[in-house]
Amino acid sequence: MIYFILCVDKKFGIGKKNDLLFHLPKDMAFFREKTKGHAVAMGENTLLSFPGQKPLPKRTNIVLSQDKSHNYEGVINVHDFQEFLRLVKEHSKEDVFVIGGASIYHQTLPYVDGVYLTKVDADGGAELFFDNIDEIGTFECVSSSEPLDDNGYKIRFCYYKNNAKIDIE
Image (cartoon, rainbow, N blue to C red; front, top):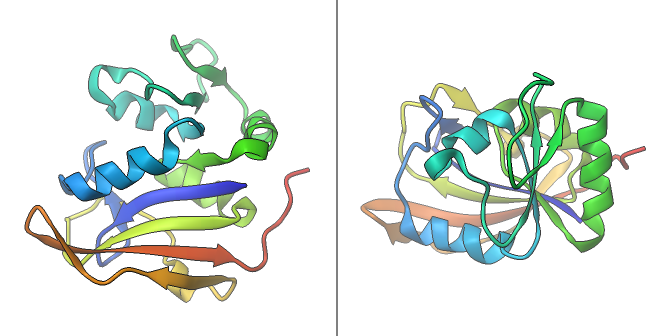
């Protein structure tokens, strides 16, 4: 299965200055629990936003960089979007989580089975945004937690199913 996992503000903002909008310990714990032991797929800027610009431990990290001279240690380096999709499909037998950034999310949206979306009831002043899947007719919110307090913010853990998934060729 192929999933997205991300956190959005109330405007579906996801990032600012190549960083997260909020520091949310409960959301981070949820992310670790869901992705640990699985493949994570991302764009280069997402990798560069990690502490020490190092891949996430205990996961297979697939990184797409358009610059063929950019190759990072400890990851599967990919330099072409079609090859990125092929690797996502190959790893999806054991679940793969696409973790950003905005361009990767937008380009791979038709191919995902579902989206784990943490919604924050606040405006984070984002520069980058996720597609508003509440307005896309093919995505259905099948579960939503009660509001939780996370570091002073109200959040909800939601899961969306893609009812019109396109298979990766």
